[in-house]
Structures are given as C-alpha cells and as structure tokens.
Image (cartoon, rainbow, N blue to C red; front, side, top):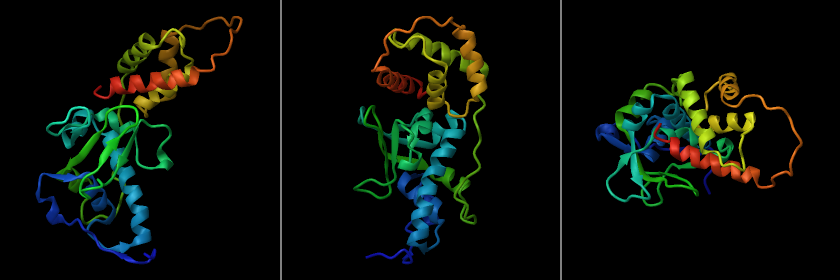
Length: 242
C-alpha cells in the first residue's frame, strides 16, 4: 500500500518537450512536478491544482491563442486531430470541487496512454487524445519555477458583444420560458463568459427586456429548471467557437 510520504519520481522531463506537442496528461504532470521528485501527498494536491490552473489559463487567454495551442480528436467526427474550440474551457471542470454544473469534464490521462487525456460530456460531443503545444506549457510553467498557477489574462468583453449575446439568447428562448428572469440571464451568460460583471449584464438586460408590470401569476411550471438547463446546454454548444 502506498504511503502519503512515498517518493514520487517524475516521468516527464525537459527532454520530452522536444516534440512540438505533448499529451494533456503529461502536461499536467509537468505543471505539478516540474521534473522534480516529491511525496505522494504533495503530488496529489499539486496534480489537482495543475489541472485547474491549465483550464483557467486556457479560459482567460484570447480565443485564437487558445485554439492554436490545443488539439484533439472530435468524438463525433473521427479523423485527424482538430483545434479544440476555446469556448469549451470555461465549461470544463477538473474535479467535483469546481464542477458547478459545467458541461465538460477534463480526464487527465487516457486509460491506454498516460500521455493523453480527454474532455468529455454526457450531453454533447467531446474530445479524446487531447494534446497541447509543448512550448505553451514550457513558457507558462518553466522548469526553474515551482508555482502551479500561471498568471491569467482576463477577457475584456465589449458591451456590443454582450448585447449580441443577450439578443441571441432572447431569440433562442422557447416561448414556455420567455421572458427569462434577470437571474437566469446572468447565470446563462456566466456559463458562457464567466468574467462578465453582473452590472454590465443587468444593464443590457434592462435594455432588451423592459420592466414589465407585475400581473396575476399563472400556474408554476414544474419543468422550468430542466427546460432552462436544456437552453443553457444549447446556447453553450452554439457559442463554443465565438
């Protein structure tokens, strides 16, 4: 039985970065260990932090930059590896602790190849054999640093882009849910673009959905939450490339 104090030897070294691409499982191992041995207890903690840090930085850099650095095999279209759309990262959980109903889950290692992993979803197509550019990992998590978290670059979302997104949501909202409540609009937009300030969303919401006088309440729709979640999944899938 392994003890928390057992020594873990790294299986990824700088020599492995000579190839242009490295599997996502190997990348997470490098971010956690940086080519240096550590105890099993320390490794388990840093491995979780490494996966979360990787997803965080891919969520925060410009979309085209994220897409040129990660590729994988689309489950629905077997063939050559393709760029993974940047919109997938804000919807990707790395553990139960940061799941929060996200659409995808990062699987750090493949059952048949510890160098590769997957981004999977029970609701929509995912990606296997996920690979990352070696220089992207090496530049953000250099050998001479032990920090797991790389400095993120936050998205700046223009009001015009936010307004277009709200307009699209309104158009795609089925009549049984219309109009969406303000809290629902905020939740849906944060599922697509997590960093948008709430005040900005409220401002655009009030522009698009004017104040309505309260009237007599109809019967409560017991399926509203499920219907809302279905709308979320549909909108997230449609916005992945945007």
